[in-house]
Figure 1 (tube, rainbow, N blue to C red):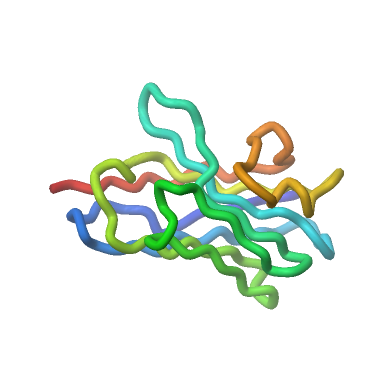
Figure 2: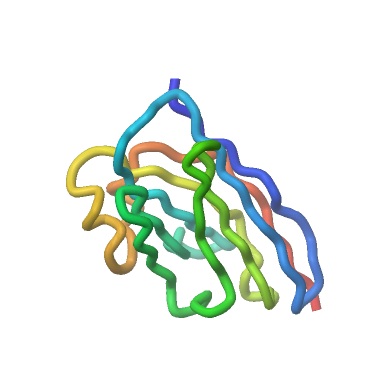
Length: 130
C-alpha cells in the first residue's frame, strides 16, 4: 500500500525556519514527480515546489522562490522542503504528493496541477505568527 507521511510542521515566528519531510513507502518508481502543495483556509490548494526524481530538476512557485528548497534522499525515499524566512502568508496545511504515471517528467515543469498527482499525504500544519 502506497503511503506518503509528512512530518516537521509546527508553529514559528516570522523569519523562522522549518523543514518538512515526506517519507514514501509501498512503491518504488524509477522516476516520478514529487511535489509539495499547501492550502490555507478558504483558498485553493497551490503547488509550492516540485522535484523530478529522474533528474533532480526543481520548480518553485514565485511566492516561495529564494526562501524554500526542495530536495530528496534517494536512499531514504524521502523528500524534504526546507522553508526559511517564513512569513504569516506561508501559514497553511502542507501536503506531499507523488505523480507516478503518465508524463511525470513534464508534470514537474512549471506550476504543478494537483490533478496529475496519484498519491497524497495526510498533511502537516505550518503556522507562522508575527
